Length: 226
Ligand SMILES: Nc1nc2c(ncn2[C@@H]2O[C@H](COP(=O)(O)OP(=O)(O)OP(=O)(O)O)[C@@H](O)[C@H]2O)c(=O)[nH]1
Ligand SMILES: [Mg+2]
Image (spheres, rainbow, N blue to C red):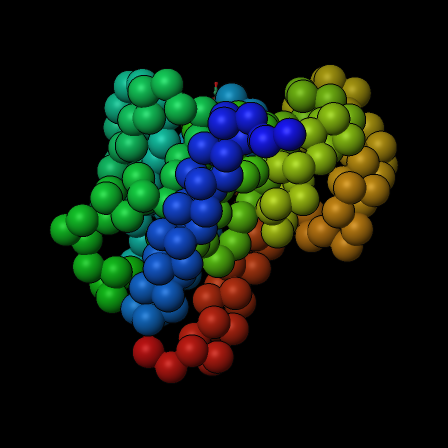
């Protein structure tokens, strides 16, 4: 029996995305920019966390950001308060960013003038996991208000990410967040995954994360001569 046509079309789209993502990755490596993407469910705090990250990194590093949403420029407006270059990508009906969208959005930007490029994906715990964007590091965010079992329910997004970030940590006690249960959920889906606990609102935990980013950039620059 032949495969349904929908499966075939989907496979071709993913294959095409992989080709563009590979080209993007080579371009990023060639220019020395370190690219970090952020995925999470809607409202986990990606933009808040990213605005804080851009603001705190800027005295030392050259940073820029792309942000994806189905509609509105709201997040780009918020991120631009950091004074970093920012572009909004609106996807219309798509629940994820694709490598081609990132490629188009980078038009006119000189990657050689950047240390870090951040890409905030559309808020969704399912779709973004299938699409490589050529990034060096993928962060999956989970706020303490979402429940500790999200990694068990949405394993693919945790599997496709490199680092987990637990956000809104200052609310943990109020919502009776069970840190040990959350850690076990992540560990069972992705053993050994690095986890940061922080609050973008209070700034608690941000310095450990920023230090980690600095080390990642350093490691990259030591292995790739630019
Ligand atoms: N208390 C608290 N609230 C936070 C924190 N981070 C974000 N929020 C709030 O959570 C809500 C959603 O935050 P956003 O940063 O817009 O979340 P997002 O993941 O970018 O949302 P989408 O782009 O729509 O997916 C806002 O009301 C923020 O003020 C935090 O560390 N502590
Ligand atoms: Mg956002």
